[in-house]
Length: 305
Ligand SMILES: NC(=O)c1ccc[n+]([C@@H]2O[C@H](COP(=O)([O-])OP(=O)(O)OC[C@H]3O[C@@H](n4cnc5c(N)ncnc54)[C@H](OP(=O)(O)O)[C@@H]3O)[C@@H](O)[C@H]2O)c1
Image (tube, rainbow, N blue to C red):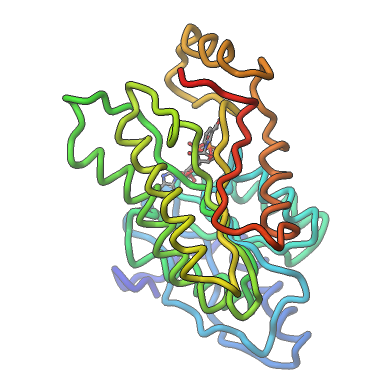
């Protein structure tokens, strides 16, 4: 049942397929768990539908694969990171907010190469209660957590003099508060797996753009959080960040002159490829055993715009 409104999430094809996978996981461990479907709430009513009560972690039925929870994983950079991690053997909890169709399509594509290796979770990260639930449901489904990727972010201009408290809250809830409380909820599971956290920052945290002061401040806070949590969670859990430059232009705000200015100040003279972010993400999460509290620029060599 939905904890907030007492309604059960709607049944869907996703529910039955994921339930079958979940039964398979249980069967592997000869241990039947629960009977609750892990469903995909109705996209059209994201505020009212939502995540059922947290599941009890299935410590007796852990996945044989490492498990990553990737926020904002339905599209763009998040999807590229999810695909790269999945290709490296991770099972993926694909978090989405509004892009439920894209999340399901990504899940279907990944499942076609390795069944029972994904879980789609929908939540508005501005809703505080959803944050520990996302972690609980990932661990409830897969039995472990090895990586948390705080990729989801809000991005919009807030010229100084026009910024409203609601805009500030939207940016900070998605870009700072959610990563912090997801990390806090994930900490015991990551400690058990000696896992890692990856935060997606932005070149604008250190080279701010004039029309993005609140966004740049939120990403600066995320970088401070990366260093702070690296200390608080050491030595068991590593915490790092990537600061991308121009990789994918925003869907909106199509300002060609600005794009040309950005490229003119990029030493490599081109936008980055999403796979260049995804490869760095995999390296930081899996291979960079002596790296924590670092913010890795993947920006083609950027000067301030
Ligand atoms: N693209 C670039 O070139 C670039 C450059 C520098 C830094 N970055 C950083 O890299 C990361 C990924 O970039 P991107 O361009 O792929 O990001 P994006 O498309 O702007 O956003 C990624 C996802 O975040 C989710 N999201 C936003 N607000 C949310 C909320 N309140 N609750 C839940 N989910 C929410 C959205 O999910 P739904 O679609 O499901 O609603 C969205 O698809 C971000 O952290 C971004 O700041 C990107």
